[in-house]
Image (cartoon, rainbow, N blue to C red; front, side, top):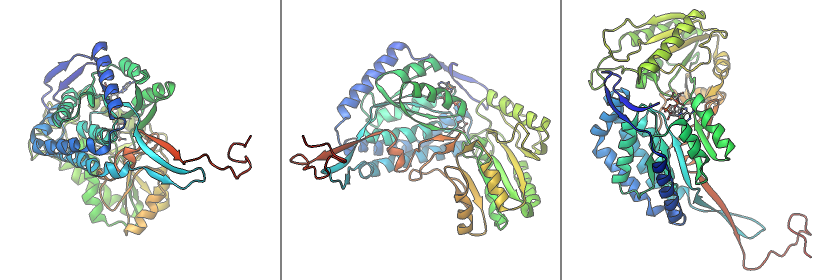
Amino acid sequence: MAYQTTNPYTNEVVKTYENATPEYVEESLAKAQKLYKEWRNDPVFTRTPVLHKLAQIFRDETDSLAKVLTTEMGKLYTEAKGEVILCAMIADYYADHAGEFLAPRKIESIAGEAQLENHPLGVLLAVEPWNFPYYQMMRIFAPNFAAGDPIVYKHAAITPASALAFEDAVRRAGAPEGALTNLFLSYDQVSDVVADKRIQGVALTGSERGGTAVAEVAGKYLKKNTMELGGVDAFIVAHDANMADVKAIAPRARLYNAGQVCTSSKRFIVTANHYDEFLESLKAAFSSVKMGDPMDPETTLAPMNSKKAKEKLQAQVAEAIAGGATPYYVHEPIDDEGQFFMPTILTDIDKSNPAYGKEMFGPVAQVYKVADDDAAVALANDADYGLGGIVFAGSQEAGAKLASRIETGMVFVNTFFSSLPELEFGGVKGSGFGRELGQNGISSFINQELVVKRDRPNDDETGGLILPHKF
Ligand code: NAP
């Protein structure tokens, strides 16, 4: 697929980009590898000032950087600005904490004075999606730059301008040549880069389909990888939930970023005593959205990222209804050529329905009625994915008890889901493996090198049981 910016609000094709030539790919890998060798033994603090500078650029240029996002994938300008600020926070966070996270760890051992040293692993390939074009890049760039791993990356075909804006900001922050290089790669080229001996790790954020394809190649060539994939996150309304809070948060949990968030609440699982009230309130919220120009601060629901994504979601909804689901609410059509999807609420989705357990990536809410809290947890766990989740219950303790029973990577109790620099992000089951952000986010692509030292050989007092025999 060609790399192309198409504004999903105006449908204007803004710019098309050529794929990277084999020569450019080779040159980029060579530069990255050279930098890795130079960085190999440089302390973390030699790199972290660049991250502070990068954070400053994101803060100083919030408006113009956000505009690139809105033009390219249609998100609300207000939300785009939030994404840019979050990027600044992530860059600052790793600048401030990388030294402490990567400090060597001493180990008590009979073998000698032992410690685990955290060294960079080498050049990484990142493959990233369009839904948060900068944030996804910053999640992988900031920790690994601090750690000393240069990155080459393939961004989504529909967000090339965001990919270039990110690369440009990193360059202007003072990162050395080879630290981060955007490559407009075809899928075949991605496989070739994964296979390249200089690549030591692969990080992908995207769909299960994309993740499976890239992880297969990474597995074939024994490349360490992290997979941040999709989800069908549950939003549980427990029997004793505070409904005023639920009503305030539920629509946001589904409609933020036009519903195109991996951790959007895609399944609302509501105990019977709250079901009717919940549906009515969600309908009221879905019917009151204002679709329109995403640059207009009055607009509350953005267009979807592309015609293709809208058509895919339309087909999924049609299939769900044909399979027996009830379209409890569908927003009345609006007169606009943008790629808007009318907010929709589906109920009565049984296990045989094609929509059951499938990710719907847009403003469509699936609402399920359950008898009690145990049934809510059981339904939440009846999924091939496990990324995030939200629980509303009568108290934070009661909610946390339910949260701990959900087979998923992250759960928020009595509040909305948020991604922040200090909070580990990642899932289980079909939602992938590995974590980004937080302390774990910096350890994915690290060589934890064990060094054991002593002045003279160990005087083996174990009779050769666990240490080599004396001869
Ligand atoms: P996608 O199709 O998998 O694309 C993600 C990235 O992978 C893009 O750069 C894409 O390139 C590339 N890609 C896809 N198939 C590939 C292949 N066979 N070989 C090499 N590269 C390949 O995902 P999407 O539909 O754009 O993004 C939405 C999905 O991402 C949703 O499922 C969402 O839940 C998930 N997501 C997960 C997280 C998380 O942190 N867990 C965060 C955000 C989104 P092209 O653009 O050129 O196809």
